Image (cartoon, rainbow, N blue to C red; front, side):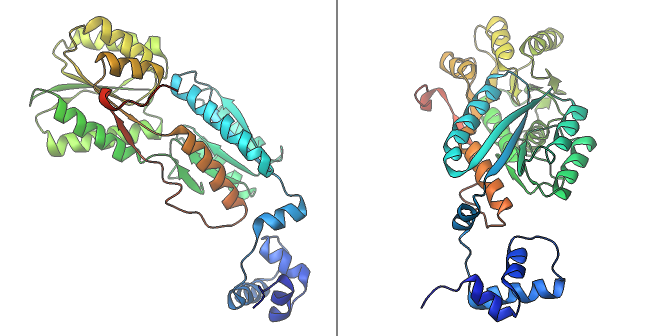
Length: 345
């Protein structure tokens, strides 16, 4: 039995080929009743659209943007490299992906850049941005302009984004809490938490998950307010030194991510005997070295290559109104110790 065609759909629905094309490509100019008739015909006939063939016939190309903070942390460098590699592969499939940067934590600059994307011909955007009203409103405007929008690394659950691509950061924080609680040697441990910024949803969710596990499983712990280094190693080093001076009996440190070089250098100088229990995020050259010499006890990491490829797949699927395989797009959490470090590179 031959596969149904658009001509079969047009005959079944009693409409023209042009109307079928408008409905299938979600273009305006079709009455709701007519569109419903076309979609019912598609379902009855069991028509499965070959999006790749249709795009090839129309010479359809995709232009996608990755909007990232201009931070130069090791994690952001690795993330940009992963996006560039994924974009190079996607270019063979008529997909052009560009990295655009914005001053970190500058919500006004984010909104201004996002508002300009429709006029520049972009079809979709993956963005890593602070969760603020300005950014949320800009995401809504992108959707109204017809762009697919993916929150990347750090979620925007209150915004009209199409999907989040990244790890479950609450689960990551809970994992960190369980590791630290198991490793530390005191039931009444004092724990210091360091972050980039609590304006970042990923850091906020990690702290939330961490606090929940400590409250549930290690109620004797005292967790201090978060120090925010704003992704700057030198600032974080100063803040950490001041905190260690103010509270000499700190037993453990949980680093939510960013500014790890300043954290590690300070810990090596201030804690040469490796008395402190330390759990951090993201495998970078600095955290690898700190795992190897015992400065850090465990690192919770994520596959940046998987994230970059997933964001491209999800954006294209949203643009084409095609389904997404949830299992393929699930970004998993990985726990690294000195004993299971993968080979460098």
